[in-house]
Image 1 (spheres, rainbow, N blue to C red):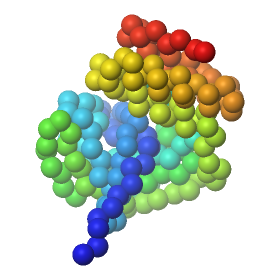
Image 2: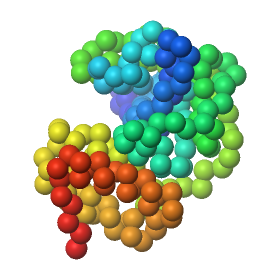
Image 3: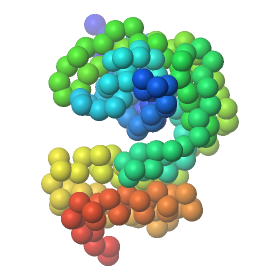
Length: 194
């Protein structure tokens, strides 16, 4: 019997609220058997929007400030209208997929929405992440788990990720990293650098 495998892709999911305003959030999504599994935590804005309006956009980006910004109160990024769904995609997206949700499992603590791609567009080439961009995405995941992970684990991970920042960060990565480090400090965690 073939083993079912899925990969988690770190992306930005854009949903719309009741007034049609876009809401973008970083999320790890899976693609299994041709369908995207979008698993927002409950409660969350993404969950509420998807439950009410069964469409969303998956944004593939290399501007890691969007990942960091969503976790530090910086969510105002320019959007453009989608072509096949009532929604929007991020203007800086390298590509985006427009999804219709076919069904969902309302599990706790995360629901699972099963989405079918109805449109995909490529806007610019993806040239790969450098180490700093990967470090920002990983640090954003850590920040999303403040209060869930032990402080020592966060310190260890951040100190390791700092190496990639020191070696390959440009202005955008340094800005995003700064936002995340401020958030960690606000949580009362002191990060010591060697």
